[in-house]
Image (cartoon, rainbow, N blue to C red; front, top):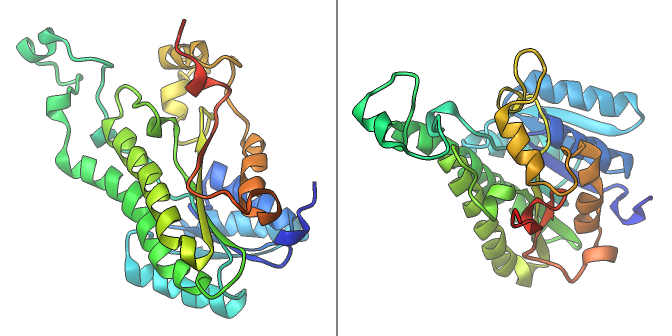
Length: 282
């Protein structure tokens, strides 16, 4: 389906060098958006932008750090000069870190009595690791929004799309920092929706369920390619009994970006999860 309203709009995608956000950037480009692919890994951003341009779209790659205000301001200057001011901001940068992750789903007394260096309990979590994960996901959306939303205030039909997670609804075991951070992003989405409503900026979020990407491959697949125990649990709790494909997020993205379909929708968080959020387990 062609979304004529999106043609010619400037879309800024943070985390665009990754699998899911790279796919988002390509989807917007196919609708005629001029896309700025932002990523800390400039090479990954360039690869995505090059693929868009080779496919007949228009994109530029910008290496930047979503945790540094000055870096984002420089990125904005480049984008404004080469593409124009932002119409669509997709806050996709984020991620997890092993320092904010426990080894087991639940605490067992033996782990406190007989200390095993290979077991990381809640009490072993590194505060700096927790801080890194929280900042990457929360401040990594706040700072880009501070920078790009200023240009959106004076324009019509602008929107911000946040990327949350199933963790925003229910915390997953082992990843307390990431779960807390994504819950914060969901709450922040709702806060911004209210705050920016008088300015005409709609703010919504997409909550992907489980997608197999490079980032989570070690959690989902063994070295021989067989599914891990965690994969078994995920699929058992997903009524559609499979992982999602990146292009299955396209519908939610385009729906939220095109005011012809979602002009009166702001402050929502749409699960794209194969039924995970709806399933109680029984």
